[in-house]
Length: 176
Image (cartoon, rainbow, N blue to C red):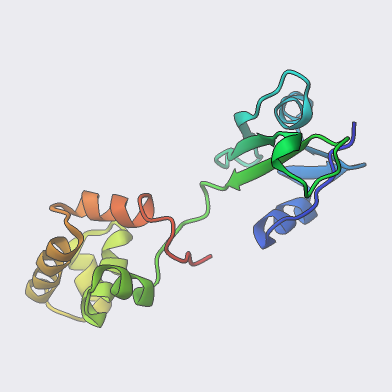
């Protein structure tokens, strides 16, 4: 049975047009690896499949794509033809760095422009001195910004702050 794509976002279109990591051939969504393609089809449209997660391998030592497949029951969706199985496929590319933008950080956490800019630099993971140097401020000013950022975000350590802004806050618009 064919597995047609009804809608996709820009990143998915890019992955499919590259044709290296995710492929679409004769309406079959898959990967360069036939075993992974079979597993993906099973998760998406297989009789016993109920959805699930899997990885799609990539070349050149890159981190595998993470896929989450959510099967839709026919009764749940009037958008799809009744004779076709339907699934949503969410793809995460761990190699794409997610970095929040200064305006979103300011708004979400109530930071000043200077604090938000410093938070963006801290997220890069190189420490207070490097962040201060990149912003041309003293290390003392950087420490003051960081203390204020901790208070406003409810974090206590740089690692917590980085985790909050990189992982726990995927809703912030990413720079790609």
